Image (cartoon, rainbow, N blue to C red; front, top):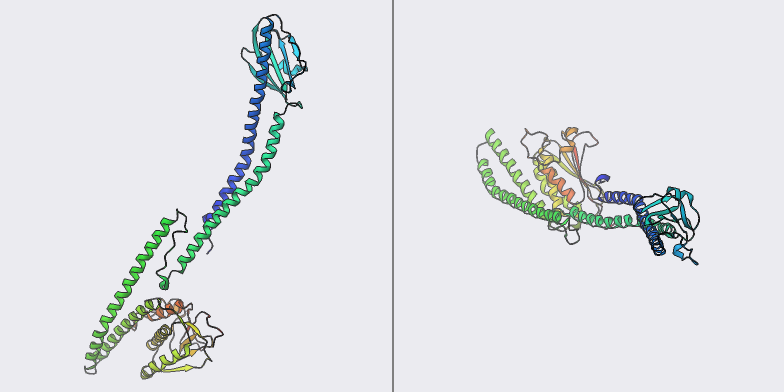
Length: 449
């Protein structure tokens, strides 16, 4: 059975992992890049603030009128790429260090609090002063300068992060799918065990140890349901057996009493009613026997001796009703696996069906085929083609007015065939008259003699 994709756990997990991986692949690089650039920006701002504070301290030490700061003899690596100017309140440059950056100097905000700003690759800090002519310090850093490495570090990290992230992007969903697949494999094994539970294996229960914790309650409930079902079937079988056994003796006594009556129409009707009740009891016992046979181990046997024995037992009664019966030669029969007594029960029901649904003068042919299958064919009135598919249903009869049966016999035959891995095939003979039943079986024991 194919499970729809939308209900497949593995498909859902793979889809969710794939969607998550795609979303992560889109969002995470931008998030990491933004985080790193924000960190680098804080680092740059820290350098600008430190240099500005150092410069402000130097100016404060030199006096209110001196805005000139001597150029350092050997600037430190931290100062490479830095430039600064000191301006008065009109914007006139009073002191300069480093390359001129007119665009940045013009764009620098002149406010009462320090402000960071950016012009292209230039990062700047405008800090107000409160000492004489010196009004603002404008400190700047060229991010494209070879000495400035924070952007290089960010780019290098992002490149290495991509090399690490891309394999993980595919590896994590693959691992998730693998783990989910293993879990589904365990569930399929449990499903196979559940499929194998039948009348012959009614004591099997689903193992709980190998199941995920979330599935254990469902499996436990299933096991409890199987326990209740087994108890119900056992009680039903025992009830049917007890009722059938209790009815056999009274029916036999009633038949003996009826036979002592005078030959009248009522006597014949009573005998028919008693015989019909007897057949129902017999079929109930057959059902019970069939249920019990499921617990017995099958064996290898040849069907032809079983068929011959059954025909020897049934032939006198069939002939006494005005019908004929014959065993046709189909060649040597092969070994088959099953239970001989169940095959005899199935054949007995097929003969009984032919006996009660054909008029006197009908011929019944039984054939044991070389592959071990058995066919029972008659040349009676047969059955309408539209009823062929329902003929083996329990309690179904084409003519419910006849009162000749309750529709159990053929369902018993069908059950026996299926319990042995075969089937009951119903067809119309090549002559176009009557009906043909074929008991097939699974191919076991082939080639054995």
